[in-house]
Length: 151
Length: 399
Image (cartoon, rainbow over all chains, first blue to last red; front, top):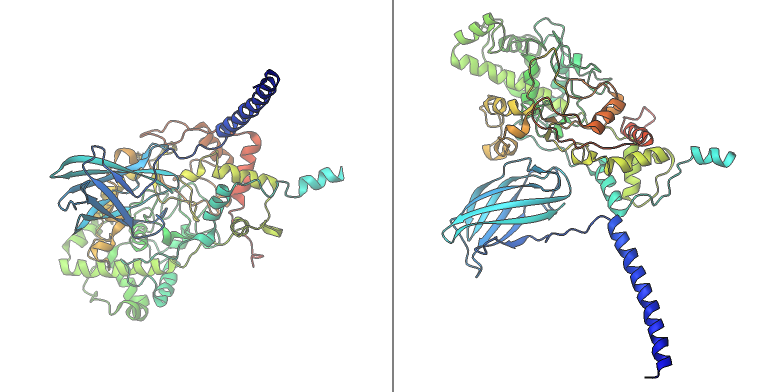
């Protein structure tokens, strides 16, 4: 490639680079000013910390309400999909950004079988990011899982 | 100069000063978003119009008191948002807490500042036999039902039990003589009188359920925003009101507790409000949980009409006392600008002082305050007050 052309190209590259740098700077500035995007995996299914269980939940009110006591049905399986039917489940949670817990003390009320557990007394008293922590004790072992919810 | 004046007088903010998220939040605060009146399964007469009409008569009946001078309306004044403008309510004597307004009370999960009752009817019974409020007693109330309201009572609740053989004044919370007379009664008679007493509360509750929060200027503003329109006429906010709303839903952190169409999360919070010097130590919610569980008129009790499964507020109530130390229920902010003084015992005289309290975030006298402190500019303070005034009931011009 001729030297002249190289110089021209390198000028172009430099100016393009300048534009890119400026764009990144503007984008970074915008990101500093704009609220950060949620860094959490918002999903209604998850895997427990030690990988012993898969968890999925459904709510009796959709979308998940703020300011209304409602119920969840949690489905618990092993990683290969076999239902875990005789687990002891404890539910807790809160808002990490605000340092407070749940306004209620939810409990498993019934166990309709096939790995399903009805959790009553769920209540969220403001919008935002909530963490629901599920502690599981069953024959495969003790484990815990977290659901991140944006309301 | 004219242009400057016009600029000051007209709502000056650009229509796009609220983001999409902010507009969503504004809409969520509107009365149009209020859930339907929640059922009260513990009171089978809750939505029975004759019971509500009977309850209205009882609400204004001063003979429902020891001295014949105090009715519910003595403190819950009908022309003053059903409250009394006093730092602490005064019945037969001064109490230790601020009288709560009643608009939208049927949406409350727990009643009283500390939530020591779980239904409107159980709440209504408590002041009736409190020695500083109505100072009445249960057999006197039952005799009064028979003497004054016999037929109305019967039409709603069925026949009254036999009462003529019972003492004129007896009850478990009255004077020593009244308590002794109560203990001397047969258990079946006590239960029958308790049933009449519970029904009195159920009629009062049926009436109080009809007291709804009125639509305000803010609601008209929020409804327009919700429709994607720019609010016009009376619904339009001034620049200061818009700034106040923006602060309220943003930097001032008000939404953490004052959210939803009633501007309350129905939960209990320690906000570092001072303890009264001339009143016993008040632990707020921390003391109320045990009292609620022991209340014979709670949702799980013998006088409740609800199956146990329906008593969700009680069954899933948090027992943790530590975080509830000096925690009090978040009051609705609807109409709050027009009813100083503030807090559970009227400790803070004006709205400006309230904003100052949230700004300073003082340490709690006991437990831990949840406040983190907010720095406000002078204009920011004025803006918040201006916004809160848009939540006041509108006069008779309201269409």
